[in-house]
Image 1 (cartoon, rainbow, N blue to C red):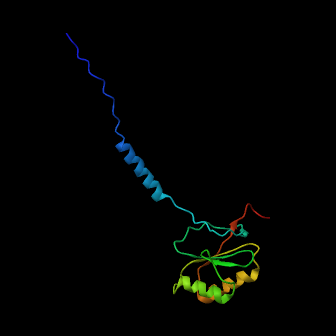
Image 2 (tube, rainbow, N blue to C red):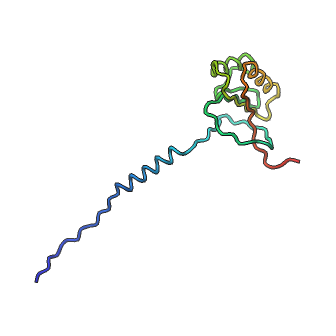
Image 3 (cartoon, helix red, strand yellow):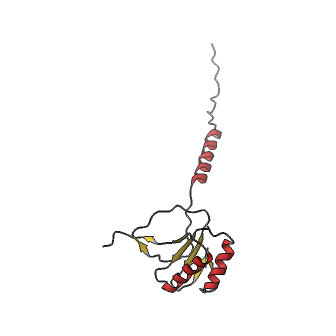
Length: 142
């Protein structure tokens, strides 16, 4: 009796399903990842011991005042720190909407009158949702 010798077939591994699953996982993680918006301008914020976590609001105006009093509205530098310039810039970005949240970030070395001027302009324009950004204090101060 003669046995036929068959050539060994190489086992095939079909990777199509595995690749599909990997791509689905990749898409899932890309869609479900939240990205934190970091400010391009670095200011040294003052600390506060009672800072509550706030979720990122979808549309906000951010007024940044650096240590020398230069002002930036949504990362665009304003020509000067005069009240009329701040008012014109905020009015241009916000339009008629006064319910847009406005975040004020002032460096801890910023002279006080720049912050007061900015807050006064915001109040005169009719914004009632003003937040002042601070850093969380390292520990309890006593």
